[in-house]
Image (cartoon, rainbow, N blue to C red; front, side):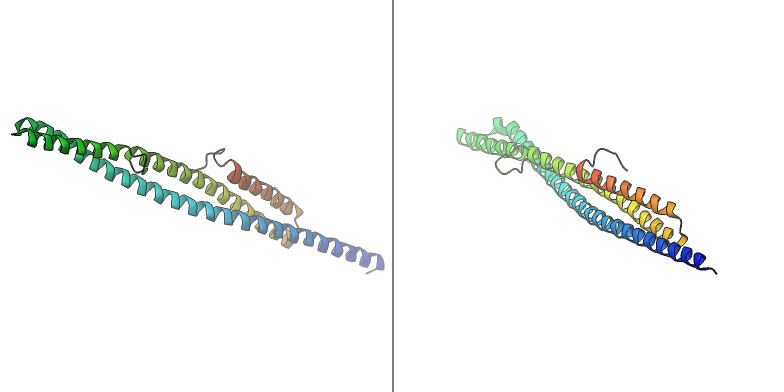
Length: 196
């Protein structure tokens, strides 16, 4: 082997080592992006589950209030029917007072802005929890797609080191940009794309 060939091989080896360092740096950046999207995804998933439980609890409370409201309203209406049969004025007054109390209680079960636990307020709170759950779920789906893009990017960048095919590193870089785009969508506009 001549000195000239030997120098060409040395230059080629230096070039390959420099290329491998750049690809290793790309892998490190992608791994950082992956860690970020995974963390955001896990937080969104936890939020989604939490808000789903909250909405379920509020709807169960709403149903309990509905049952109570119906029971008290029915008792008031049935007692009203028997009011004419009451004997003296004192009995009628006591019965009417009970009917009025039941009707106030039924109204409080329907709407109670003071405690926020009337059917109307519970319904609004449950709907709000469902909206927050849906938002967190949308974020989660974007972060999952971003994580998949980052993981595939890492695999392709690693494969480019082994095979020497620089095109794989470029595809890896493009997938990283796709992952960053999905992460940004998840953070800023999760309802822009309707993902399953």
